[in-house]
Amino acid sequence: VIRYGVIPRRLTIDFLQYVMAPSLREELAAAEGRLDKVKVYERSFPRGGSIEVATLWSELRQYAAPNGWLRSTVDDLRFQPEVVKPMRTLLVQEEVHDVLHQRARDWFAGKAEAESDPRRWADWMAEALYHHFWLRADNAVDRWRACLADRRAAAGGGRRTLLEVVAGFVEAEGDDDEPLLEPRVRGVLPPET
Image (tube, rainbow, N blue to C red):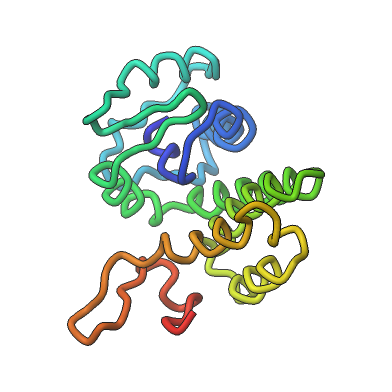
């Protein structure tokens, strides 16, 4: 769960159930054709067994602490950068990385499409856009701009929520005051954005 739990910005039980669990089940069961070859630290991802989402969620929540590597709220868990960055570096080498982002993008986009509350629409769409950028989609910036222009973004801080998606990819500023972008999105997200 930790390995795939770094894919979302916030891990919820629903994300675990509907996005991660299908890939976890496939990878645990597959004898061949795995998308997660575990090129590094193979023993950390044993194969076989079953998945019970409620049990996984409950057990993972036990590791959460106010100053630990995993933080929790009532609704979600958030891995800290000390876990996220190295785990993403390992996971990006695997085919399952893009599969998880595609599933996440489609799941969040579906939730946004079904949402009648404009504020919640912006929350769901921000998550869909986040995963869209991670997929290095050529139309990610255009899709993000279209969402900013959407009438639903004007409600209750929706534009700010959508702007924070892009701001989240900026790690720092370089010596020449140019923003340093998350390496995976550099080619997709122009610095002037």
